[in-house]
Length: 193
Image (cartoon, rainbow, N blue to C red):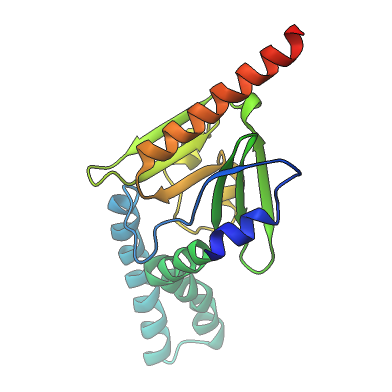
């Protein structure tokens, strides 16, 4: 119930929480990993080879130093990004209320994104065979969209907010659409009087 408690702190008066959850935990491979993993192995392999060659051939100190950032980058894109992604998912909470969608996340602090249901025109569902999936709220730049969930610094700032990855994605999508419809009915009924 920790997820509900964290989300309830963000609710307004008379706002009802309809659904809450966290992203799926553990190692998550994504479609983009079909390209990212081979690339990271090539990058890391070359960086390690460069550094090993510089050290064993007693190259000038500058050449040994030059390879260090590339080795560190290789370590991050090969294995580190999976740990960062996993850590970020342990600090992410999703909620749907009768008024809005809430996403709470943050690497070291707390960032709250709130999207009014009435303003959500572009909601897309991407569902996997095991019924897990993603719900994206708005359009993403296609260049960055394939990098969702890669834990690459700055990429998530370029993406539309999303519940990613969640269990029972279709059910959550239906909760969002029903809440959106109910809010529209309330607004129309309120303005008609």
